[in-house]
Length: 120
Image (cartoon, rainbow, N blue to C red):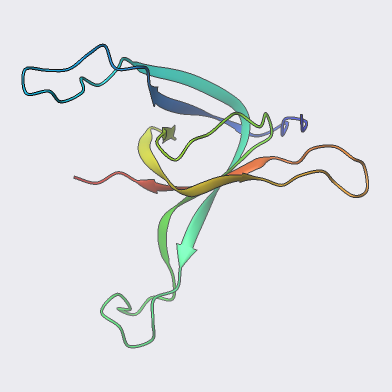
């Protein structure tokens, strides 16, 4: 396990437990929401540069679209999880990935994933 970042922050993993059954129309009932605090993470803003002259570029160079999270505890993040960062609920975008082992020390690096703010 990678060492926690001493000045990192706590993010909360939001994961649904198993479905308790099906409703009257045969649809699965969502399981209980399980909130797991993950301490010592690094959270950085994720920016996107809009295309020059595009609709999104209105006198600005970059647009903040979400966060990148580095989890040194290497928790088993899934694409179906959500995460609460600084009070905002976000969806995990793409596949979370581990950095593997450092070629210098042999220690495992963090798990990194992108998180987008939930709207609507």
